[in-house]
Length: 418
Image (cartoon, rainbow, N blue to C red; front, side, top):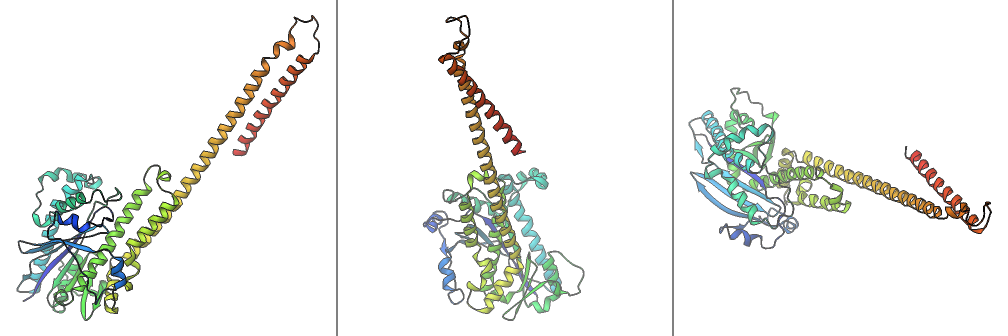
C-alpha cells in the first residue's frame, strides 16, 4: 500500500543579523519552549560551528495531524517547518492525487495569511493591486498563520535590527516523501512539476538526480521528491537542505537590499568607499557556505549532498548577481563622489570669481572718490598736473586695467570649459 507525506520549509527575513548576547533570553519571554539547536559533531566541522552563531527552535506543535515547527537564527532568518499527516492509499496514482491535493491545500491556506501580510507592508502593488479587495475577507487558519509569529519576533528585536531594509516576501520549498520511491517512479514528474500529468512516460533525466548513500533524491529547484526512508534513517538530509535553502534566501535578501541601497537619494552622503568595503565583508561573511561547502561537513558524502543541494538552488547565479550589484554600487559611489567633487570645484571657482569682481568694483569705487581732485577748478582755471591729480589718474588707470584683466580671465575660463 503506497504512502507518503509532504514537507514545507518557509523562510522570512527578520531584517538583519541580531547582535545581542541576550538573544535566547529575549525569545524565552514570549516562547517559553525556546531551545538551542545542537549540531551533530560527528558530521559538522568544529571550525564551521565555532564561527556560526547558534540557531533556536521556538516551538514544535501538532495541529490537526500536521507538525509545525518554528526556528530562528541570528543571521536573521525565520523558518517554519510543516509536515503533513502521512497518507496511505490503495495505489500510487491515488497517492499522487492525495499529495498534490495536500500541496494545493497548503498554498491556498497560506495565501490567506500572506495577502493581508503583504498589504500591511504596502506590497500589494502592481499586478497584485486587485488582491486588496480580498484582504479583509481572508481568515487564515492557525496552521499557516505565519505573519503572527513573524510580526512578534520582529517586534521583540526591533531595537537590535541594524537597518530598515526589510525583504518582506517569503520563500517556500516543497519536499514530497514517498515510501519506496523506486516502485513509484511514474508519479515523480507530477511532484517535480507541481501539477497532475496524464503522461506516464518516465523521463527522469530532465531532473536533477542526487544519489546520497544509495538513496535517490529528485530535485527541480522548487520541489523535491525523496524516499521516506531518507528522513527516517538520514535526518542530516533535512539539516543540509535547510542550510542550502537558508543560503539561497539570505542571498535573495541581499539582492533586494543592494537594489534598495542603490535607489536611495543622496547615496554619496550616506555611503563612503569604506562603507561599501564593510558591506562586502558582511555579505561574504553571511554567504560563507555558498562557496565553502567542504568546510561545513566532514564526510565526502555529506559534502557532495550539500554541494548538489546548493547547485540545485542555483546559488552561483545568486552569488554572481550580488557580486555584480556590489561592483555597480562601488562604481556608482565613485561617480557620485567625482560629480560632487567637480561640483564643489566649480562652486569654489564661482566664489573666487565673485571675490575678484567685488575687488575690482571696490577698487573702482575707491578711485572714483579721487575723481573730483582731477578736474577740480578751485585751485586754478587751468588744468595743471600736480601730485594729487597724478595719484588719482594713476589709480584710475590701474583699476581699469585690473577690471579688464578680470573680464579677460573669465572669458578664457568659459572658453576652456566648452
